[in-house]
Structure formats: C-alpha cells, structure tokens
Image 1 (cartoon, rainbow, N blue to C red):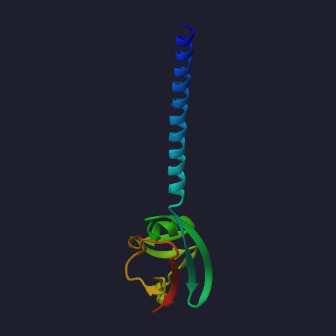
Image 2 (image 1 turned 90 degrees about the vertical axis):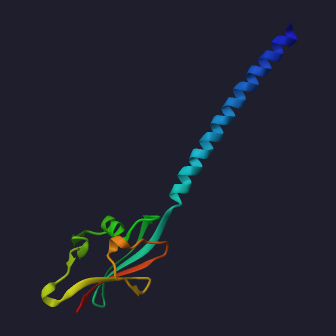
Image 3 (image 1 turned 180 degrees about the horizontal axis):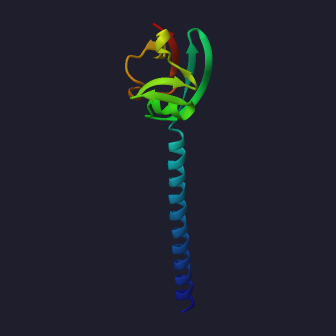
Length: 132
C-alpha cells in the first residue's frame, strides 16, 4: 500500500512540475515576440535646409513600413495642403518668392509625395526650401 501511495505522490508531483514548465516556456515565447517587435524599429536622418543654410538635423526612429509623411509629423510641426507639405517647424513655403519644399532620399530627387515614400533603415532625407 505504501508503494502505491508513494507512486501516486510521485506521479502528482511530476504532473505539477511539468505543468509549470509548459507555462514558463509560453512566457519565454511571449517575451521573445515582444523583443522581436522592438527590433523592428529603424533609424534614419532628416535634415531641413533653407537654401544652403541648415535649419535642423535629427536622427529619428520609426517602425518598419512607416511612410515619410507620418514619421515627419511625429517628429516635426508639419502643415500641409492636400498632402503637399507647406511648412515644417514654422519654416513655410513662400509663393511670392517662389520658394517651395522639395526633398531627396539618399541624395536622389523624389518626385512623389512624402506619403508615398516608405522609409528604410539608414535612409538620409533632406527637405530643402528651394527657390524656383
């Protein structure tokens, strides 16, 4: 009889410990998922120029897949007119002087709106108030 009671006690203990092991494994899996999503954060540099004068230069962070317009709005005071950027941090376009915001990404002129540009790790974006 003692052997049966001892066997049952060992079996119950084994089941109890194996249940704890499964839960800690799940806990580890969920913490791994959190750190994986944190690794999705990337960095880029945004520079603002008025002609050749540097107004601002920031290294910003963003989530993979974010577009330039949303990242810009998170990091600067931005005004726009139907998606076309008209002012960044109080530096506005001036139609009388034919001065407008244009931008490059990695030293290449961009001919679409900032909403259509997906940022990638290490991108260098330069917004320039340029006179035409």
